[in-house]
Image (cartoon, rainbow over all chains, first blue to last red; front, side, top):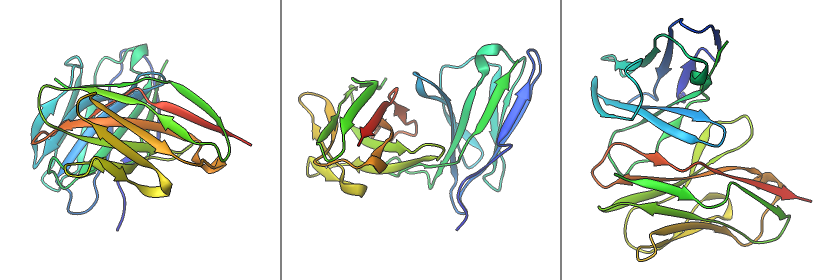
Length: 113
Length: 113
C-alpha cells in the first residue's frame, strides 16, 4: 500500500507569490490534515478535511486555504507569501475517527525569499 | 481548547542509559494522547497512543508511556536507549470525538556513545 505522497518535495518562491501544495492520502483514507513545522515551534495545525468538508481550522490567516477532492486528494494554497511562511508543510491522512493515528507524508519544504 | 507542553527541548543521554521525555497537556474534556517520532530525514510515525483503560501504554522500539490524569501528564520512557533512538519526539493530544490533533514543540533526543 502506498504511503502519503506530497508534491513537490521542495519549493522556492519569492515574497508576494502564491503556492499550491498537493497531498495524496493512503488509499481508503478520507481524512487529510495539514501542519506547518518550523524549528522550535513543532507542528502547527492548519486544517483538517473529511469527505471534502473542512471539519477543523487552526489559527492561521486567511492567506492559507485548502480543499479536498472527491478522491480524497487535498491541496493547500498560500497566497501573498511572506518570509515567515518558510517551513516544512506536512500532510497526514487517516480513516477519520478520533481514536486513529495519523500517517504522515515526507512534507514539502517551502522557502520564501 | 487543548494544548501540549513538552518540558525539555533537548535531552542528551549516553547509550544504554534510561531516558524520560516529559509531556504535560491541558484540556477541559477527555482526550486521547499520542507520541510520534521523527527520525532524521524521515516522516513522523506513531510510537504509541493512549485511548482508555490501562494507564501504562507500550509502544514500538521498547518505549512506554504512562498516563497520569491527576497531573495531566503523559511522559515517555525507555529503560535503555540506543544510538538509533536519536530523533525528535512529539507529544500530541486530541479530544475524544474531535478531529484536530495538537502537537507539542518537540523534544530532540540525542544519544551519545
